[in-house]
Image: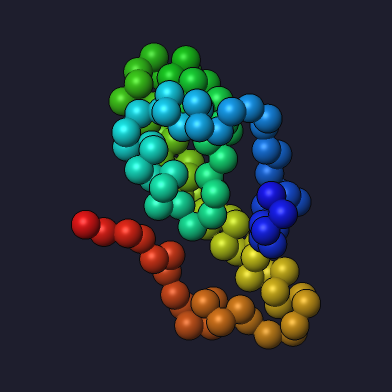
Length: 108
């Protein structure tokens, strides 16, 4: 994406495909988490992982829980990578890191 100024292209590979169709094929809990993700969670990648996890676990529910944990791990890694890149560019901690901020989530 043109407006993606994070470290994501350096650490992840984005698989091609129809993001909307992939998003609609995911279970509701995964779609909700993608919506809440601090960055664009790349629905095609999520669907590929969900299908792989479902094959490995033999259960959609276990695959769903595993993918939700994976999102948390990826988000933490992206948060750290962005903060480190900011530190290298500016010599200072990123404001959100200095403030020990957490990712803000939408709540109902």
